Amino acid sequence: MRFIIMHKTNPRWEAGEAPSPELIERVGGLMGELAKQKVLQSGEGLRASAEGARLRVSGGRGVVRPGPFPGENELPAGFTILRAKSLHEAVDWAATEVAVLGGALGDVEIDVRPVTEAWDIGLVPKPERLETRRYMALRKATPATEAGAAPSPAQRAELARLADEAGGIGVPLATEIMRPSARGRRYKNSADGVRVIDGPFTESKELVAGYVIVEAGSLDEAGRIAERYLDVVEADEVDVRELEDAP
Image 1 (tube, rainbow, N blue to C red):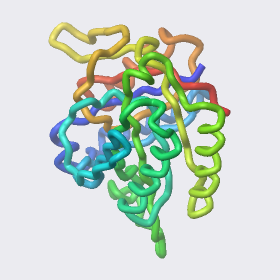
Image 2 (image 1 turned 90 degrees about the vertical axis):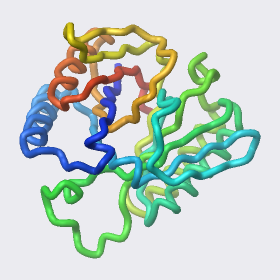
Image 3 (image 1 turned 45 degrees about the vertical axis):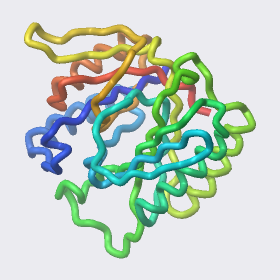
């Protein structure tokens, strides 16, 4: 089984503060350990919402709001990572994705934010002549997705076609669909230690700051990784969600 462990942002990260060398070392150490155990599939951090945009589509009409944006309905249902020349181009791609879904999953809200690259935090120089960057288009949950609705086979085929098309301008896309939060778990730091909250989650008002995807035999096993991850990234809260099987 595959699980995504997502940590939430805080005011320092939203203000654009760079991670400390100690934090980078701790996260790198955990990622290396998970990779050695052959359970790590991927992981990314996201730039502050001030560098992104929020797309809302309701009744067939779309509105784009530039960042920064507040935490509102931040319970995710899935995401796509794509490479684009600009935020505007990435938002246009997200709007195309919404058109493919055709309203079947309810009114849609998608946050588009740049993925943090190694050169964004000073680890390596930015490659010369690089004219694109990676963006995450994070699709929010709706009552339909929380009830288990998912894209139809025809919609999945069209999304795959879009993925191939977008992959041709840089790197292949990564697309993930999360199962309802009823099958997930939340871990929160508190004065009494780590609180464990079983899904479903009625709300989540904290923006996602980053994630790892791991292979685990059960939610409990993924949860043990999540508790370590919570400590390493110095977050107040992480969510563990089951992912659909990779195609």
